[in-house]
Image (cartoon, rainbow, N blue to C red; front, side, top):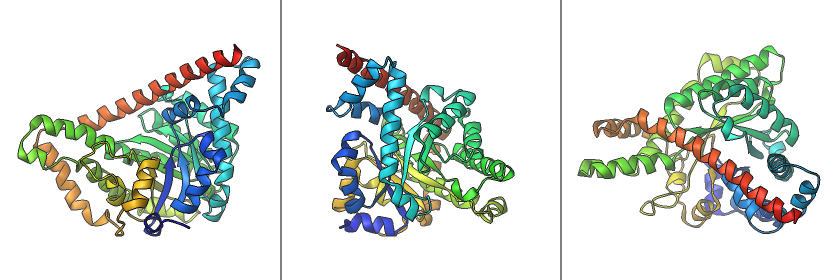
Length: 370
């Protein structure tokens, strides 16, 4: 039986995706329970999540021993294990994918973040991951770096459904939407069925508040303190406004008339970092039709326990959101500087996690081969 709070969130038009993936979750039936009881209709992952999954328990030991005996290196082992988990998760979510005509039932796998500034390598790995998972409901995650934009277009043009990750700025988000439309137009020229191509654009939320609040605290005035905890939500709300604008243009209509689907906004980094804030802040304040909220399990359970869903909390707040960003500029906080820093930090963190994942696998391989 589904939880009334998560059911209300779903009925308000928000797709709930779990920001976690491990063999333990797959094999114990925990994800199946979350589908039934928490309205979960998709799942995302990243290098940090896979690193944690591989370092806990013994569910990977047999495969690690086999792949080590086959002479695989750490990169090959990581590829084998992650694509296998994503493939199994895709199978688990396949009925939701079918029931929603491909909108939900999605599972994401990430391009190596160390390729974030290499367009050609990102395109090549996007194609490889899509082929190796071999499931129609996989989403390949491409970072929204400058080099990532042409890769988004190229992947979409090939008919690959893409999850664009690490979006912080409104300008970059508009460029991401444009890259998706460029890809759809190329796919149309190639005669592909546009209805088979889906995409989400992962707009990060809590990290914005973490960085902005640090700067507001350094200023220390009452006016600065009054803006704490408001930047992330304001930024996301203005992103939804941009989404509404782009997907109501004549350019979009010509694609929609041929079966194209919108690139949905996805709220990422929705776990609250500051304990002074409500633990459901980035869920209850970002409700609108046609969005995805990918939550760590802790945030999902908080929402199920005490999240108050009151319908659309985005579209009536555009003016207030704009005023928040204006207020930050008035305090001397540069929006451009903040979002540029967050993008670079995000790429660096994921790249570091990727290297740590390989290091952890190598250590487990040494044990397996002992």
